[in-house]
Length: 142
Ligand code: AMP
Image (cartoon, rainbow, N blue to C red; front, side):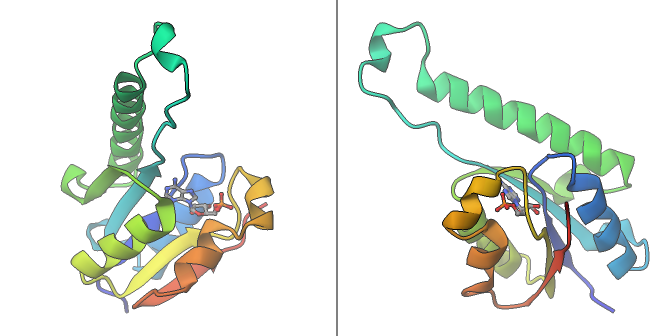
């Protein structure tokens, strides 16, 4: 059985299904799971400085909100806050990096997320497979 499994979630409606499959994979031993959600940087738009929106502030608010939602999700399934990571960056490389640094033996990810248009560019799962150094399980969603 796997001893450490990274679960990549986009906090969409499909997240519960992805997490349930990961729990099955480790025989419901939630301490073997590490949750990650990646927040992509807010692009700075030319002329934005004339609006009352500070992109760095906005980004931090999104990151904080995601961390809270991820911790709530983790708590619901018995996953300790120490094993919950909300990070800023690009999803596939950040998920791969966490798998390496945690010496995980598997990554669980949804086959599709809430952004179907990304399929034209290659989904996160597709990108993740290139360069992954451990097993990758894609959970069929919607
Ligand atoms: P997508 O690439 O949007 O089709 O999403 C496919 C799967 O990749 C989702 O079901 C999640 O498991 C994972 N995923 C997508 N975006 C993120 C993200 N920002 N952070 C963590 N995992 C993600």
